[in-house]
Image (cartoon, rainbow, N blue to C red; front, side):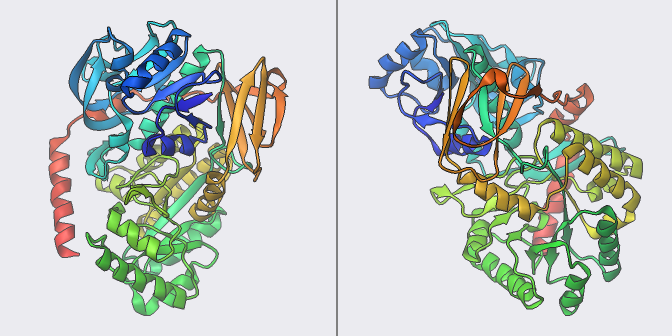
Length: 514
């Protein structure tokens, strides 16, 4: 049903993330929706216009669509961010940070950029539905830069963190909503793979980084997770207490223990990162732990770090400089996809909230709202922190964990989720809707669900080959979108120059003193 014209790496990666089946090339008789992921070749313009004249649906950057829509008027504009509005394109989407030059259709009617709309959605000249985005996806998902962002916490001071400049999770949600709306205009459902294991609705997990915590802090952490009944994913800094590593690991037995670092820094060079992580991995192995995952200090990430982890056989990592609040993805490095899977987390730890002078109740409220939002999105919610402040807020953290397990339908470790996601990645299937029936074809059925979205309702079924009546499926209302308040949006789109200047100075100091 969905076809990419070219199949660029970024578009293929995004559709694989969502588990949406697609083909590539010029549209055929069975194509309902064309994604114009590149500027069309002159020789293909006639066939593409014919597709639109037959009522085909189109998703495209305005810059790519110009040859197919001769009367299209556009204007160049700097797109700092897109703020959500009440249109269906922004259901459960937050602020989409872009920081990119854009080309906006003159008839734009969705997505607020400054005080003007930036996205067009509606009928095209051929009569079919179209969405014209003001940006090209590939350069955004290839962007490796970071920026300090302020997050919508209720606290006396702004709460910020250095994260990926492009909020790729929000970008993915926006694009998926565009696909859902376009298919709906053709009377078709959106078919995708489930985003979490079958026995969970979304899944909740706790990540802990043991930066420079004391033995007492580790004792408090061990007691907290035992009482909570979950297994935390603990990334260990082997250089913090090298003489006590075996004893520290023993305290954490039963938890999902992975590697953080030996020297608490992500270096610019491959050689330094490899030496640092080799030492950390070898020390953990001596203590009886064979790590599968890593987490970069300070959430930093670069291609040299990724290459070092790949050399060591690390299967997944988690750095919010690469991405946050998103489904797992593979960064594009060296002309292809990394062998190291990114498993994103939410980038704000309790430490950040306490530094902004939030009280314990405000910390608890912040994470509860985050969990509710991720549950409504039907996406896993991984939060993170450090032993000292998790122990300091043990009652509130216990409340958050209990709420997360209830709202998300169960708990996950990051390692188990990464293993499941790698199984999901290998699945290839096709979905065809015709005459009120859904036909699924696949050679692999490995305990992954298919989710069918149609007109505000949703059906979830086990992936296996066969033909099913759509009306006979078990339909349920799609979870109510988690809206963003005006205050939250104002916080996320504000410039906060003082915060940015302070954090840039802090970042410079940590790099020079590490």
